[in-house]
Length: 530
Ligand code: COA
Image (tube, rainbow, N blue to C red; front, side):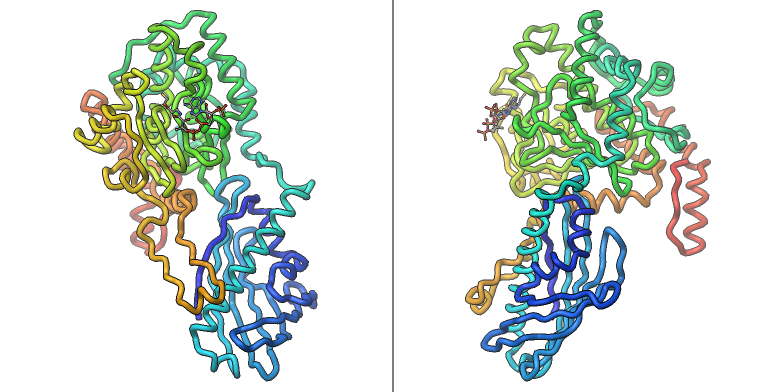
């Protein structure tokens, strides 16, 4: 018999891996395990009492670990004899995906065989018993891991070293942070696609945009149609700078880079990740740093906890969006933030769980793709707050869902669920929707076997998708993104000369040579982004 499943564990991948290799944890997790003793490296003897239908037996045998690839995967093989009851053997492939710094997806695939009296019980009864054992194992294992996470003093910090360094570097430089006001006074600088340049491929430390770079960027890249620049008074600039510093130091936005994927997390779960003015201001700098980081091939934008983002932080409107001047300045910051997400040269995926409302919807629409959980709830309640949704947000909505649906969303201000969002084209994928979940047989229900869980974690699907893009040519994807975004935003946003220049640069690139060579040599290409 064969079966697959997965379990979402609230612990860092390293913690789960350690637990998977700890004989005490394994013994406590294997249902009916009386003993598990290490006899050699990655080999154990075990005694397990197991009941399959009417047959209860004590199995004595060995457990071994093979194909070990820390901290990602191994194969656990258990085989034993239950005397007169017969024998059993199971090969269990276990793999760990780090979804977030402290969330791991454990996937398993089991192949099991039985012989002797057990084999006469029939496959249904054996399947049900095996499924129940697997469910019980992962439930017990989850408890062990939870215990470790709460007890362990040496558990990895919630913020891994790479992310810590990234955030420190962002927040360390006062000079760089000062440039973060740029979107407020000069939105065109961040409004254009971060077009692929030789620079993007040159390994260099992560840092924010400096003044000369900004000048170069603004020379190189055509301004997109955008609101008039709003002059910023010195007092406002200082306030903006301090708001950005607050976001970086208090980690209202977190960044985590692993396996070439950067996960940017809006981190105000108590307020459903509502965006403060400082968060809108801080995002362009974070995106610029990720754009230049050669370790990053794609970016996922998500929210901490149950929600993606409930829009702008309405609670602070009294202070930061009280009159026309403030509202204009605020909207420029929102557009600069969303432009920075839309125009980073790397593929972006928004992972939507729970609420995705108002400005949160604009953030999601600024990503290349949207992967939703079945619990996601979208909406743009501007008409309920007497706000006109911004030009760019409206344009993105129109290009995603079409005129009629856009009108329904904006006039009505109603929320819509993930299934509807998929139907109208607002999201690209709903995790687990339509996947086949096998019904439990009567016998399985009597045996207490749980319903097999559908693959339903949008982050797992988004990560798999983002990782699949990592092997493709960065210049090609960045060029396609520039052209498509420009076309989707209206012809005025697209500089045809720039487009031709990008196409010519890709044709002259090392990656283009590499792609042709790999094709001829029947191997996977190794792209460098230059
Ligand atoms: N700005 C500021 N705070 C927000 C917020 C927002 N956009 N959305 C939610 N919150 C806060 C709530 O004030 C509450 O804080 P509190 O616990 O200190 O009272 C907390 O998040 C939880 O939200 P709550 O309203 O209690 O949860 P709910 O399940 O009843 O409703 C929403 C959730 C998202 C439907 C509701 O909060 C809402 O309508 N938010 C505003 C959405 C909106 O209009 N966005 C567009 C802004 S332009």
